[in-house]
Length: 191
Image (tube, rainbow, N blue to C red; front, side, top):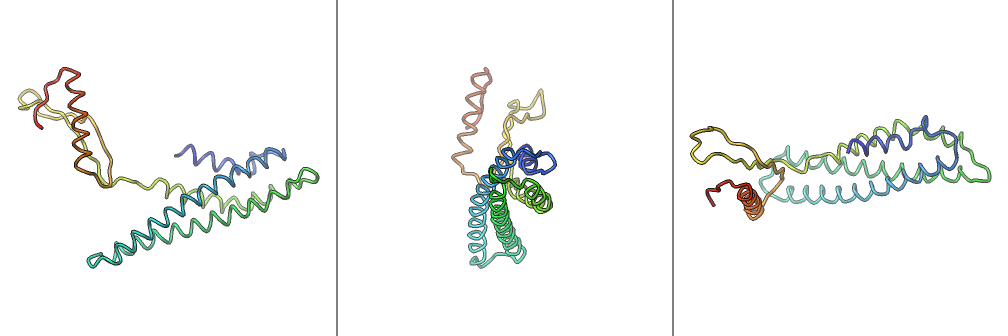
């Protein structure tokens, strides 16, 4: 995720872009494509956030703080979506200035420099949203000696981050751990 963030920021860095028209055009087109993908991501996120808000709003026992957090989540997605669309439009507006017959490279670089603060804020906020944890809990599967006579501790063998988890998934995980233990010559006890 960090690498993607750095690549996206560097792609539109006017200082490292040089004065080659083809390189500038390729970078702007690449950035516009990435912004198009961001619009899809943010639209889906906005839809999910709005559905979650509506579900909790219609629930009789939702707390005010939960509703306020969900409302802010919706506002954040909406704001980022509007920024992505505006930035994408601005980048598309720069492409005619890179016409091979009479390129205005200086104007394009100046425009990119003027947009740098807005782009930096957008990228930072976007990657905060992308980085939001999908998990709220961690299931830890541990192995220990049966009676714990010799070693009074357990060893973690698998970590599973989750937001919600089904019983069948837990059974499948424990089954795979037991199979691996059997392959290693360990004796398994319990269901």
